[in-house]
Image (tube, rainbow, N blue to C red; front, side):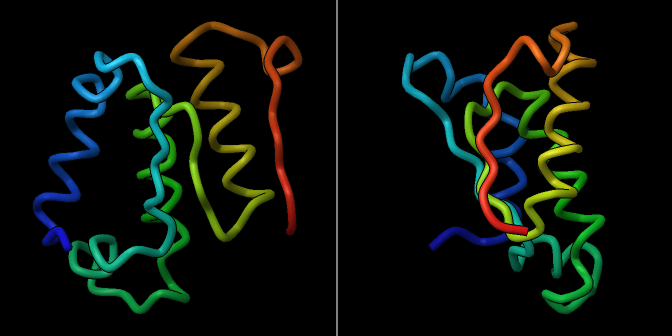
Amino acid sequence: GKEWRQNLELLRRLGELLALGRPVLAGTSRKSTIGKVLGLPPEDRLEGTAATVALAVAGGADIVRVHDVRAMARIARMSDAVVRGTPAEERTWVTEGG
């Protein structure tokens, strides 16, 4: 497994993974890295998850895996619109669950 600093580095360097030409999935939702940085238990990591989802989308992630689907889908869509200038209705979004 990776330690928390390595997880932060992966998030910072997503562009390098994108250069491989494969879809990139970011699964940061409620992760221990967020707990380590913010000093919070899993159930209190919503804001940390939101920050990492926004950064992953801004960094080019194709897919984000999350627990709080509705809120994170909105964050991802807004982040995508700001970074790419693409209105949400022009892109395909898949959401399941809450």
